[in-house]
Image (cartoon, rainbow, N blue to C red):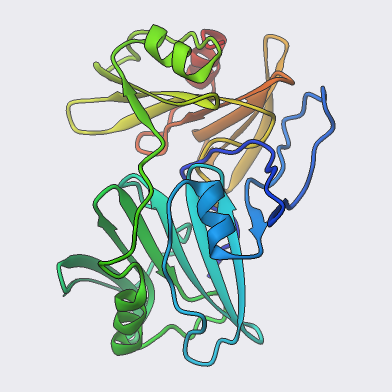
Length: 301
């Protein structure tokens, strides 16, 4: 299985919390297509909750995995990594109903399992579960079993899922605010965002914002395929898509250097920065040609 510290949702500015520290910094004013990791190391779950904007309740240890590392993405995601030598177990929680597992390996076995009130998807091989994903309310969850390929039996995976976010956990509100117009989003976020009204077959547009931080426009087609355009204060990767793609290229669009990622000549995500703001086009549902993505980027500011 591919190394998993790569994915999700998305969205961060430089962390000012004493209990959290960025994995890598960036020089002020530098325009670069290679953006730093959005994950921020956190000393405690409380610190991660303050950064992400919601809480995650997980056990201190998991079946002998004594070492625990906590990471977060601002206003988007928390993940806890349990380690036992080279073996790792990831528990991840993110805002929204998107798939946040970050593991897109092909498995022989896929099953839908009812665990309490949750409907959980198990993926694995030879009777072992490597990935479990589910949604609950405004959040998506994933449990992943590291890089050693061993997997977990269904009972062990079920026990972990039952330990995540018990019913009495207090949830902080979703930081995303639905906006009727781009003007409303601009007032909330504190900066301009110019995007097209429609994109090809994507007829419906939803606008969301986070106060003093982010604006995103989500375009939805009749078959629920989505395309997302996002702008955030800062110069970090804000795509929310940290999958590993077979092709990564830097493309010049006007005076911008854009990093485009995808497979088989089609683009699933594009990211760039102008030195003050970061931008992303996420079209994983229906990958586009480089030319089409470049044309889309040319109209964003």
